[in-house]
Image (cartoon, rainbow over all chains, first blue to last red; front, side, top):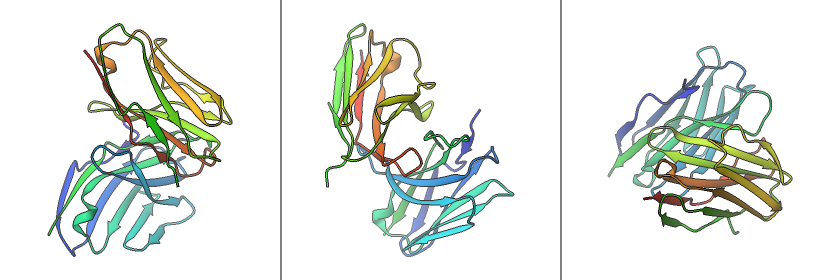
Amino acid sequence: DQQVKQNSPSLSVQEGRISILNCDYTNSMFDYFLWYKKYPAEGPTFLISISSIKDKNEDGRFTVFLNKSAKHLSLHIVPSQPGDSAVYFCAVHGSGNTGKLIFGQGTTLQVKP
Amino acid sequence: DAGVIQSPRHEVTEMGQEVTLRCKPISGHNSLFWYRQTMMRGLELLIYFNNNVPIDDSGMPEDRFSAKMPNASFSTLKIQPSEPRDSAVYFCASSLNPNQPQHFGDGTRLSIL
């Protein structure tokens, strides 16, 4: 029973274009959402987060959008760069104000020069 | 800034042997997390500590797994006896408190033959 789903295992975009990564979750009680980026043989690196009281958070080229009614969040990368090629994980804080993070399965992004 | 440090980076051992994975969290971080990543189940939380006290160990797969945090700068995850199905990448992460973004180490790739 996957509580966090990233339905696209992979995504390929051209350098300079927009990358959109999607994530769906099942529990409306989740209140804090994060995106991590992971390169091979390294640990995940925190990228950006959003609280459920907001619907958008922006940090440079990265923007996260939250649609609570649809239980959906997305990460936009504009413009995409070859160095952005990595696996992107969506994560949510479990309900009950615990530290537990629940991760999606990840989406592999390839940005072509 | 020193990040989360894990050792060893790679471990290959035979079934039935004891395995000990080590983690040094970022100085000043009060929460420490152990994750396991497999192809089948993705990234899943095994256990987390807050102020050196285990808070949630519901992800620990069975009694063969144990984790300790004797002080704020060191934690171990032990598997005894190890089995081939324990083969995975094990990550340690730390954060200032349970609700802050977690910072991951580069993981230990464990292979049980």
